[in-house]
Image (cartoon, rainbow, N blue to C red):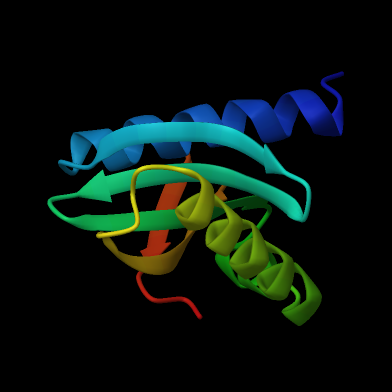
Amino acid sequence: MATSYALGKAAELLARMYLMFKGYAFVAGNFKTPVGEIDLIMRQKKTLIFVEVKLRQTVEEAADAISVKQRQRISRAAQWFLKNTSHQDYACRFDAVLICKGRFLPKFKQIKNAW
């Protein structure tokens, strides 16, 4: 049986491929800062997208799993990223990629500007 950690890493890889298929460029994954971690950082033109990935049985469960405290931590980590890298002149937004079980393949839902 796969561990939660392994399932989370697989979900992040699936989300990364999903977003790249949609035309986003990969910037970083599992980006750790002193104030928090960001699952994925993607780029679309001059916009950086900080992405939280959630894998659950249903889309609703995945959406509900992103707490206010977690959003705040990701926002602080994004501020740290912008301050400490060469991306200060980029616009930014926060998205969620929710993954749930489909009949044959996983189902994806991207929520742009999730917070």
